Length: 460
Image 1 (cartoon, one colour):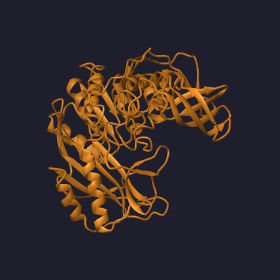
Image 2: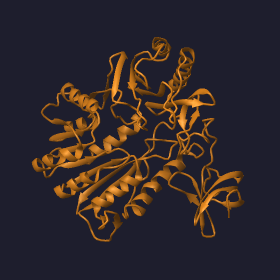
Image 3: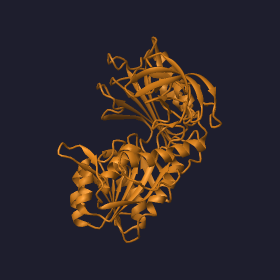
């Protein structure tokens, strides 16, 4: 078949992005929003060799698992991919995604426990991050369309709390009244490029990312925010670089304390505008409880990519000692404050630096330490994995928001993946130093294709 050809087929399964998979002869088509068992008339968008992409022209036989999406821009916005699917099916899909990634990417056959559910299917996110741009001559606030930087304007988002709708309206009102333009990625013009809000138990940190030092009418925006948030801090962040990174290096506090305290599991912690915290508090609690259950009271724990230190403090409270390694200075400062505030000075040590630079000295001092790896979506640096392998630690707890990079890193640690002479990772059958003792997904991100996963590895 060629582009724009139509055909009728039945969906046989789901792909890694939650899209339907249809096989016609030797060609596999990927079809967004098509569910297993559904019969539909499809239109070919692109085909190369045995792989093609198509869209639904007409749904002929809907599946029982199909739902009406809550979001009016769901089929255009790239933020969510699974609102058309019942939640029980989302959990099943994410369990299969992790199992398949471990097998196909990492070369690991492992039992994967069913995905732990989120108590909230909607309104669960404690962080809102929206690009601001121009569309058809008007300011646009929304989310990027799938695989693009084209903003899909939205008035609200159902996976965020209700305050998100009021915030979007206030931002557009402020920009319109004060003559401000959204950012154009191609030309670099426009003064406003992102709005980011972090909620910390009814306290809020609002950051407006701008391209110029001074924003006219900013007091008017603060007036509008006063009507939305009872307690909040407001930052201007300067980012005039042509980059996909949201924040620039310079934050300027215009209102509020800047950081706020919260209590979780009896630990007082704080966060600022650039401090990493998991976006779903309920699932975060389940995930951290499971991680704590993997260590013993006499263990020394090295928590890599530790963020603001909340999980490090939980380990410190249970174990002999916990070390937290974090490269972001603001997050390290929050971890230091947490350490003092919770009386953990003798059981918790925070290091500010790259994980690969800090690990060797820690391993020399604590060769039997348990290691926690909770890296960004790109996964752990190869040098970090090599340091862990060289140290021969007894236990590794891996936490990841990307099944593909998790499978890659786990494959390196278990020995099912090895580098060839060109530095490429290839599968092998030899037994490695570690085996997977536990694997379970946690649905940190309902309605989306993303999933958090915890894997525990032990020495053979």
